[in-house]
Length: 242
Image (cartoon, rainbow, N blue to C red; front, side, top):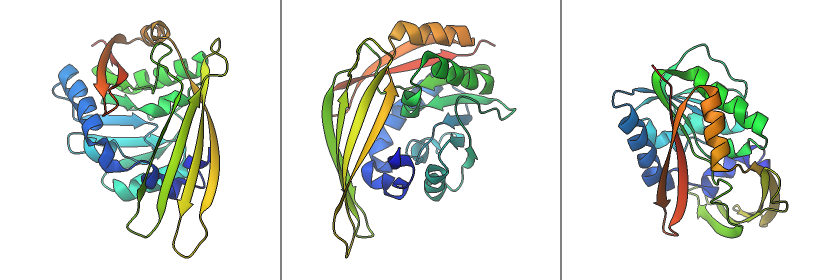
């Protein structure tokens, strides 16, 4: 996926940290609502560090991602946070946190086995009595095919605009597909258009709850409307028993 590889230096023009303030505030409130004394947080699949740039005000954050390029980007944004290279399916740090947070990177768990492995990783890093949050872009119940667009201008003269197109070619499987058409402008050069194709996981809510229970969590569901388009967002809040 080029957005997290050779295009990673453009990522904050695709999705800017400041756009995450309200969303990250919701996650902070869910964590502290479940565990008021939480002070440490592990984020699996932290990407460019957008959520962490807000959450670090309330938690000592350890940020993990499978992409070295995205970790480099996050280090520049969040130099006070610990950064660890690792796959959310297999990572084992040998320590536990008050909270584990997995944002939309969990969408790349495209099979039940992948998702199960990620949930087990989260459980292994959640202290007894702690809490884990999982935020897929969609569940099977909330998925709707469609398009969105956006982008930002950078202080360095670069600009990015994108079209994102989500489709579900086979509603009988556990994936959907996202295509990005991205236009890149940089000073003194001709504009470039790149295409990036992503295959992402899509599971019904009951599968999420079953796998969370199997991993050892006590799960619940929090639903809210998010953003100007009033899109419904499902967050799985999972407590590890004391």
